[in-house]
Image (cartoon, rainbow, N blue to C red; front, top):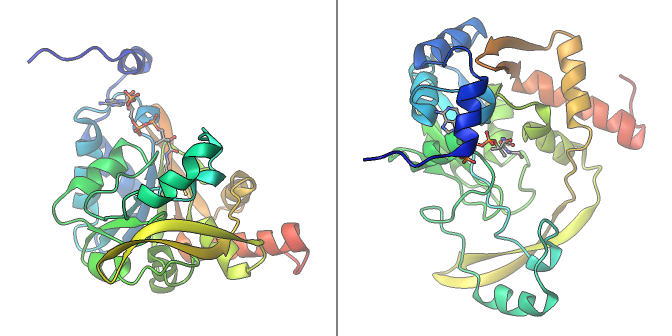
Length: 278
Ligand SMILES: CC(C)(COP(=O)(O)OP(=O)(O)OC[C@H]1O[C@@H](n2cnc3c(N)ncnc32)[C@H](O)[C@@H]1OP(=O)(O)O)[C@@H](O)C(=O)NCCC(=O)NCCS
């Protein structure tokens, strides 16, 4: 079969001196201190790595091999299973909203596509043994030893609270791994926001199944805000609480989730409400 031409892929090939293999990724993960029984939440950008031989599949294989007795987690968020009246990027015409709320299908963890989580996370979600949590907007996918436990009982609100897969990871111990993305993608900092309880609340909605019936449900959650996440990440790096290693055209970053979230809690308390000292 002839390969379809993809301009961005052509650019990536042009910008890559040495393509990355699954073995290179395994070595990098080992150098970052990731071990076989770790629990790891991964955020990623495939294109940032430069050309990867085998693409997302190679990255996932390397991750699974590295934590073969542990558990991997990736975001599977479907932010568009939400109130269309609140959409801004892009917005939809006001006249559509009522119809959309009436007819948008219920979140279905087998079927609802993740939005803007990247090819690695999408491919991870496709694997047969991957479990997915029940939150219509902020689900996580997990694979490995504790996949079922970590994804179970993901309540509607707060979506990034202690009962969420991230909250469980924080309580059980685990690592945050960023592949080609910075801390602005680090959803664990949303957990920090939820723990502080500082952000204001808003009414949000989603279509879900309730007693076998599709229903639009309204609920309250925090107004999460990632604007200061890069600053928090920078602080972690400066204090030696996060480690980086080169990976292809970019770098991989790892941090202990408890250390990172506790630092984020302190930062948020100081900067957003002046409740504490560093
Ligand atoms: C949005 C985001 C996923 C975009 O990253 P991206 O690298 O542009 O997109 P993907 O990871 O899906 O990779 C796809 C791209 O890889 C490139 N690609 C294809 N094959 C490739 C290969 N073998 N090697 C390297 N790159 C390849 C292509 O350019 C492709 O882009 P295209 O779909 O436009 O053709 C990323 O910036 C991001 O934010 N990731 C974190 C998401 C997250 O965890 N969010 C949670 C926050 S709460």
